[in-house]
Image (cartoon, rainbow, N blue to C red; front, side, top):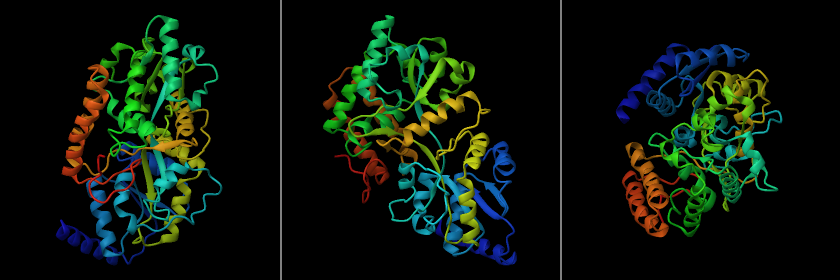
Length: 422
């Protein structure tokens, strides 16, 4: 692999030299907006307004990383700005310039995301660029059952349980819905929302007393959950049918409800637990390699990408949402108008606690997810003792982390070597 990178580095350097190192445009090398239609929108609708000129090139992750590594190793290259997911960028913290001096002109960016962009250093190694996420959705008829004094944008898990209980008792049937079907994203809820909110952890405190408290809370919520949830994959469907009045899911799996009947539904942040408001962003960032040919031009492009109008244009081109407080125009799809503010409220909340997608597991990712699914099925569906299940599943989880030698990722603290399961 090192030989391949060295060969590519030489080829990259030779090409750059043959071109006289002269570039009329800044090369934006990205793993995002890779489909042809999205790439074209990025060029024509997002980047056309940048005065310096941009050559936007999208790539699959493998070739993206190979070329980036080659230019970094060569010490010079053509890439001016890179755009990719947090997990991809985190490998190259030492090779990105500090973006702390980029003028954001007073634009408010999620503090939680800005911290992620430091990649464990004191410098701003990347700036948050765009995000997808998971939120809650409810039929408006459910709002009259909200607990007295509860703030829809600042719910706790206790509020959600009380709300779901009131709905079940008031309507005569359970109205909370959860994507627990075979194709549902239930494992992401446990990894990114429930456990971080109670234990402040996804892995290290998997079997802690705080995790036990979280699972017991979910068992209580399950009493008021539509039993058909074990068949649900996309919560937009039971919301539209009226079988479910309150639900959790990925924004892409809620969108049709808002697009078909925008007046009937509201979106709002996931609830908070004792440790914070856990949420799992699919976060992309933009960074400038130290090997970039014109650092000033690269930083100017980064500043341009953060402007409100650029953030909105990016949403239109990619369906990824702003990471800033950019106002959303009235002519967006109804789902974007409803889901965008809910995402912003969740990610900018004072108790926001981002929990990243698993990092460093390679082909063990499926087995990692299965640990959380099995834990749910044994504790909630099988009604097995919570402590016993967590102790047994922790052994499986520890074995996977050691096999992958995967260090901890947020919200767990950084680790030397495999992330420990206490």
